[in-house]
Picture (cartoon, rainbow, N blue to C red):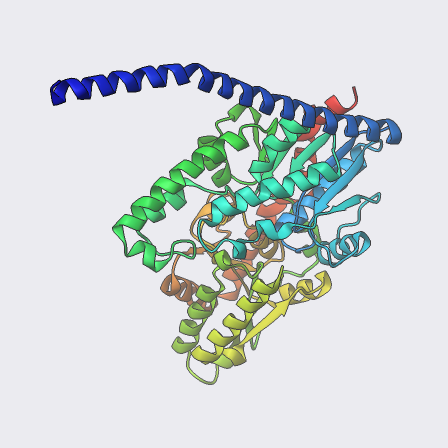
Length: 496
């Protein structure tokens, strides 16, 4: 028998063997799928039984908010407490639960913190479910493939939340989209989401494609064609999964036009998506007097924002250094200008970041003109706002910018980044008048500060007045009305 015949014979035997194994393999696949389906059905039945028992005991439905960092003190937390306050005022026969990972404090301390930082008082108590594994969504746990790692971690954290308490309506208010299918398909809950910032966006993809270094695109990646190409593929696959998870939401609320564009392109659910601008404490700043500031001996530049890398406080400090370098000593010199950085620190990582920023100030020789105000109460925040001349914001593609609105409500001349929510929704002309300034790099920020300070006091006053009048559409009252209107269809299902 020739070698060719032997090869044909071997191939035939191999095909017969595979054919004989095909039926057992198909049977095994069907069996495994059946077991998986039965397991999912059993888990769903168990969770729904738990929910039904709880509802029979309480005699009323429950709305749960997933917000693992509810005690952080940022703009997202202000949205959370305003949303709960709005729903409590409107639905008196509904219980409210907050899933949180803040283990070092009590529920009462969290509520007191919301009152102290945001001037928000809840009409009724809320129940807190404390999650023990918040570490699973910490970015520091995933030095590589951070988006994927945090998303997988959020699934496990969501599972802990779901097994601890099964609500009737689940609202993700912090951007953990991968928890939505968990609560919808296993918990049998109605699900909604308030999206502050898409986990991934087309802008992030363009940064990687263009090999542009950013805080989330390291230099060693931008310097490598292979790593950049690999990261683009990774981002595209992740965007697909993110879109599938987000599309499970029965109701989608986004905080700005910029976020809307990205969520529509990723989640593809236009009929379920609404723009609900976040609540800004506009009224709390209206009693700050609007007066000409030409006689000020020292002009203060105030920045409001959590000490996170994307807020780009380094840009603020470097631009401030350039402004000081351009000013002469004496009248109108460096002693006539200071920078005040106000923000919350969520964890040790944020506190370490503040230490690095302090070190940068020392390195640049501006430490004597830069002040850090960490986790300060609302009264002190308002005092600093009242004394400031310029409100500063430097985050690229800020999804909205509550701090920007607050500065404008306080009658400050706002200088924000020329992108995202500030560019599209906030620092826009009001009745034909200018409401602020936009910039995008160290030089343009420094030049804008110089231009603002060089304006006649009456011109600055007119810009400040325009800004204050323009932000009425971002008030707490507007948010509560829009939020309740958006959630009403889901709340109506709870009453059945």
